Length: 91
Image 1 (cartoon, rainbow, N blue to C red):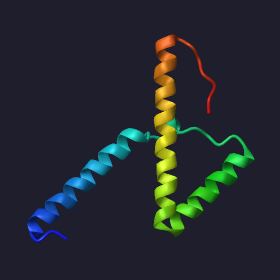
Image 2 (tube, rainbow, N blue to C red; image 1 turned 30 degrees about the horizontal axis):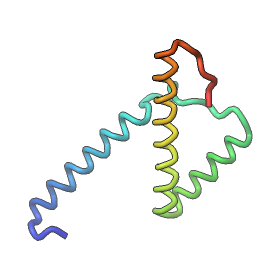
Image 3 (tube, helix red, strand yellow; image 1 turned 60 degrees about the vertical axis):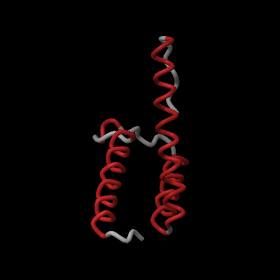
């Protein structure tokens, strides 16, 4: 821990704001922008991921990292598709 409690408090508050900003940019804010589950397998996988994430901190890190990686991958694909003018299938 930091020896200076004031400095530690500033770092804690600033880190939280930085994390909130990163999450807000990575994930859409409204429910209409989220893709709907279309298959039974997707629903089961989502339920298992939620169950894993709520039971342990390492599980939450793995699931959160996977969601972040998927959103960054989709954003990159959309940017490349926009540059070439092609429509890509949804993942």
